[in-house]
Figure 1 (tube, rainbow, N blue to C red):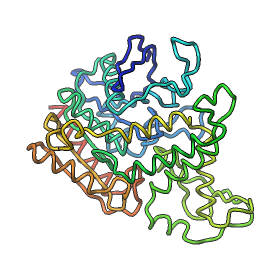
Figure 2 (cartoon, rainbow, N blue to C red):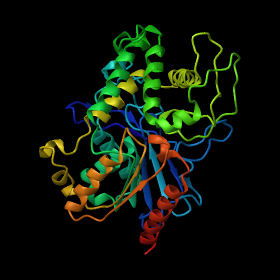
Figure 3 (cartoon, rainbow, N blue to C red):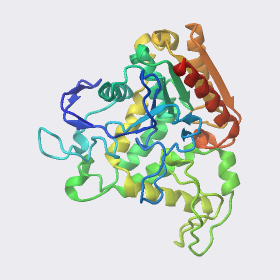
Length: 390
């Protein structure tokens, strides 16, 4: 969907003549009360469910959650996935042409925030004729967007479902993002963000950034179970591909240790081989400037900042019902961060449900098929569907 009119951005700039890529699933009901917006995580996209005809390995990143008969049942809900501004999966981003200069944006693409994404999503929903959402659903960075929706457009949504997320990033999380960004910007092929003009791609930096990120998405237990201290095979052993569990983070988890092993002599442990495979794959499809933009948006998100750090005051504007879900081994977005949101909502006497799932998978647990998690989501969305039908 193309938008000619300028979109004011929080940083003071604006962007015009931009395009948002989106997909819808299911049917909008007669009174337009069954729409669910799904907000994506760092390097996912609008393709949240289903597969593309004639394309191999095109499964949506949250396909286990969304679809006919699934927890977010598209036989009952009209689900909307929107690719965020600045992404590299169809919406206008740094690799596209600036309408004023005729040159590729590159490093000149304006800074975007979570709040800017929410405003852009609201414009698209206006065009679709959706004035109120049954729910906004998101995990990780998507959960931050769901929380921001509840604050920016409190009257346009009935439920906010915030999974494996936080009210802001910890200093440790910002530090991980900064190290990953430094890997990219110090790559000789980065050229100050204008690598498109030079016909290069800062693949070395992207590989390292991906490896750093992937380490933080998994728990220590999962890493030890999959790989331990096992040395790699001396021959290339390409095992059957794994599940789509980490597609929202650009990963392709393997079913066990030993998959995708390299024969290069400097790789000795299987975990090294796995990380290098993930880094190589990521550098082939993800845009470096997009990575910088999105991780900065993560860093900047802090709705309590304007209220002196008081999250309770910040969330006073929210009037939606909330479901928050966290996972015990998620050390990047720990349960304590979700509890901060729960506490602030309760102090505002809001309707909030909270589940803390004892799962071993780390941050990526929100993408996996844990039966307790899936049953919880199914039950909650069943309740929303009954509300919509009433």
